[in-house]
Length: 173
Image (cartoon, rainbow, N blue to C red; front, side):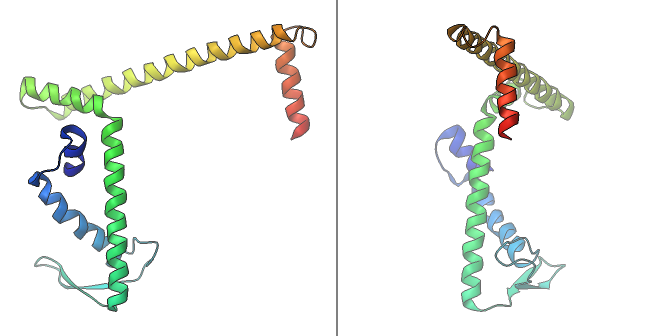
């Protein structure tokens, strides 16, 4: 996520996210080789853990061809996760900016303060969505009224239009 954040917020890539680059493939590889979390390999153990208490070192118990397929699967998981992280960050850019501003002003944030900012953000988003829906429903009503007025010989009112349209739909189904 750190690497993705660099891309979204700074439009550059630095060595600051080196821990992400190191850890993400290790987690993805364990998902594929140890935890059975791969569609391609299903629940087949492809790696044997030799030192579970001293770093959980593992060795592959498969052919070199299968190991190459594992590498490909791991790369796919990493790319998919990176793409999703970019989407999440871009979709929530306003929230991230709000949190950054808060941190710049106060230098720290409690869990309660964070949740309050998140609630306010969610409420503002919900209000904006409702406003768009209301606008759209008003535009739809206006379009139907215009259509009914243009076809006044066929429909006496918007109600007649809706009833006839629903009856036709029911007959089709």
